[in-house]
Structures are given as structure tokens and as C-alpha cells.
Length: 462
Image 1: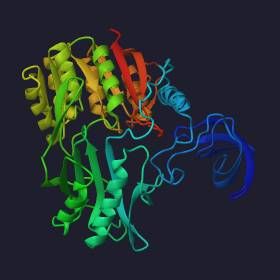
Image 2 (image 1 turned 180 degrees about the horizontal axis):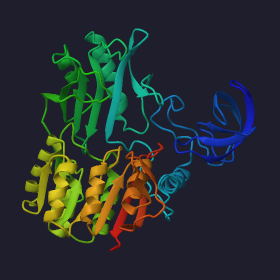
Image 3 (image 1 turned 120 degrees about the horizontal axis):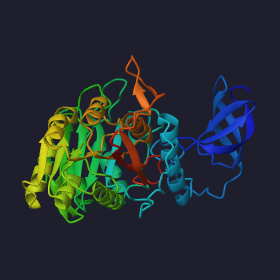
Image 4 (image 1 turned 90 degrees about the vertical axis):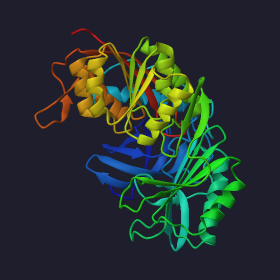
């Protein structure tokens, strides 16, 4: 087998990225958008030993699970991986994704529950985040192609609400009329880098990420937004650093309120442009409700707490909860939330890194239930070591990344240990400090390979 060869294969399974896995002439081929059981003619695009990557040229025998994608750039854009898969089969794939990650990465064999479905298969995201660039002398807005920073231009995205199409058109209109350029990562030129919008119950926080503090025509952009949103705030975020991080440190309010208030699960909360809120409102509610039920008692220490909604639910249910959050804006929103909902004294918010705040808090509250809801990179090693040292009776983990979840669970349950170089390796003699009691996936991100997972750990007494 050589590069550019066309071979006929049958996919046997799906990989972690949603690609089909097939074998031909002793080579394992990874083929995007090919489903298990499908027979296809594929073109080999890369070979390395007995591993290869291929592109489907023709689906000879389509699977029953295959459906027509709704997005016109689905096969080019890197945002979605599963629009071609029937939704109930997406749920099966995601439960298997979590189960396989636990087993392969951490050596944990556990019966993962069925994946909780989303009420909305499309149009579910309350946050839109789009890079803006310049290609062939023109401004482009879209999503990055898989594993690149090459923007795939798009005018519509089906997993976002209908307002997203109007916003994309308005942003391009504004830039063209006002002579603004999208950001070129190669030349480091251009004034506009991203457009980010957060929807909070029909109120919108619109942030234009720019490289200069003064942007000509910004009032015209506000005029265009007036025809899209009935209630919104417009921010400029200044980011002129050579970085992949979307936001810079400075936010400048152009129009509207600094934050917006909304209610969920009986809790009134507010959020600003940099406050973390789960992107799927319906699934978020069910996830948080189950987390509260699994905690069983208080006090609760909510790590990586964001704007404090989950911390408030714990405080209301169990009488006391602490929230640890490093983003000052989000922590301030959590303080306002506590006061607004009559939780002052029951909900205590600490602004700082979890690594710095957790040790003293655990020593102060040895009976606390610890909740970990980290970013995709997972829980810091220092935090995990502190948990093993102080050994709280119950730990809840919420993760959007099965790989880092498996790694962190392996460390806490002892199936993974540090070697002399600080690397995690499979343990020959696992400790038994914690055991897993429940693993429940939630489909926070339909049509994509991503999945949110809730895990309960219980101290064994060993």
C-alpha cells in the first residue's frame, strides 16, 4: 500500500475523533466520516508504518445509522464530527468513548451509564465563538479546519441558534463598510480577531476581540446589532498578543449593561463576557441536578466554580458551599449571586487558584464533599495529590474531556502512579484510597465528538 492508493475497506469501529477504523493489507486505516459496517473506497493520504490515514472517495454500502448532515461545510469545518450519524447512535458512541478512555488510559473497567440526551439536537449552543481572518485579500468568518488555524468561511452554523447567521452577516458588513481587516496570524496584521456572543435567556453579551483600543465605526456595528438583538451589551476586548488565547485582559464596555441577570433551577445569577456558563441550557440543568443529588451532604467545596450557579445549588440544598474560581469577573458574579438569592453566609466564594485555596479549606472543612469541574486540560496534579493527602469522603468530578478525566481518575484510584520522571504509568500495585461509584455521560455537545461526564468517587477507608 502506498500514498494515493485507492483501496476498498469495511470499517470495524469508530475512533475517539469519530472516524472509522478499518484494516487493509495489514495496515490500520483511520477514515473520517466512515461508520462501522460501511464498505467504502478510500484514498490513502498518509502512511506511517502499519498506521495510515485515508479519505473516503465513495461509500459503497452506507450504514443504517448514516443521515444527511445539515451543515453545508460539515466535512471541511472542524467544529462538528458526527452530523452524519443518527442521534441515538451518537449517544451510544459517546458512552463508549468514556468507557474506552477509562479502560485504555487508566486501566479502569467500569460500567458506564447510558448517555443523557439533549432535548435539542441542533440550535442548542448559547455561546458563539468565531475567529475572523483574512484570506486571498478578503475578510472571512468561520471555524477552524480540524487541527489547523485555517478558517473555513461559513454564513450559518446549525448547532447555534438562528441569530448566529444574522450576526455573521452583520460583522462582515461592518468590517467592509469601515475598512477593517481580519487578523492574519502570519503577518500579525489586522484589527479584528474574534467575535464572541453569549446568550442569557434572550439577552446577549457581544464581544469583538480586536488588536487596537480604538476601532473606527464601532457605533455602526452597534446600529447593525440593534436589528438583531432586542437587549444586548457590546464589549471590545483588546488582544494584541501573539497567542492562541482568545481574550486579552482588557474588556471595554461600548454599550449596554456590564452583566446580565437570568434564572435557572430557581437560582438568579448574572454573567459577564468572560464568565463560564455551560453551553447547553437544558443538559446543564439535568447535570447539575444529578450532581447535587450525588453529593448527599454538605458542606461542599466547588472547585473551578465559574459564576457560582452550581455552588449556589449546593448551598441551597446543604446549607454551606464554597466556590473557588480564578477569574475575578466570575468570582464577583458569584458574590452577587449569593447576595441576590439570600445565600450570604451559606455560599462563600474564594477568588484564586484551586491549588492555592483548596488545602486550607479542606483542613478547615474535613467532612466536605469536593466537586471538581476543571477545563479541558483536567485537574492539576498538585490538586490531586492534596486530595489523596487529606482524603475527603466523597469527590464529584465533572469533565468535558474523557482522556484527562481517565488520567485524573487513574491517579485518584491508584491505577496510575508517577514514575521518577513525574510521568503517569500503569500501577502494578494500585492503592485503594478511592473507588468509582457512578459514571454518567451527558450530551452537552450534540453533533460533535465531545461529551460531558459526571463521576462519583467514594473513599474506601484504606
